Length: 181
Image (cartoon, rainbow, N blue to C red; front, side):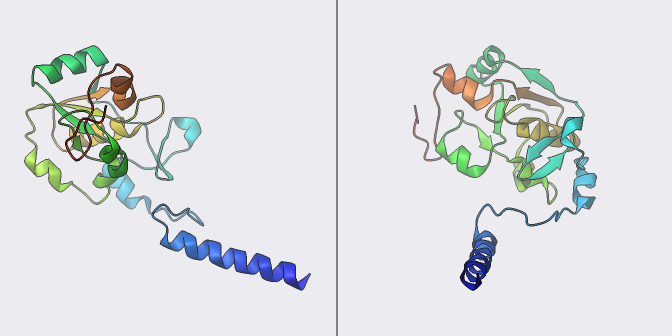
């Protein structure tokens, strides 16, 4: 019995220690401070009410202000040079592959205020924000809503996202600038 208790205690201590140094720690209790979320209009609500999940945190479903665009529309804008593509996925996903010329602006980058990247993006351009796809990822909508809040007027969310672009056989890039297809 003593051995079992010792093994369990040691396992618990090692698990907590590993969690503390992990790049993707699991929350041991609800550590939310919703004041920052409320400032962005991202206060958590229950998932039954339409919440999007991002890094273990709840966010309200976006309050529009942006439109939705399909693959054909995004491709036409991209080929005509009439759009700035914004990848709302995390940097590690972006590095593995993204749409050509896309900029990486993860939803989490808005947590501490206006991301520095916005200082270099004119508010008058057309922006299309994407993540993997809207069925599996809601961060594109969160980023689009934040762009609207910061004064960007012409913002659309790419419905099919990265996966739709890739499935259509269209070219991709990695952060090294190489075609990853």
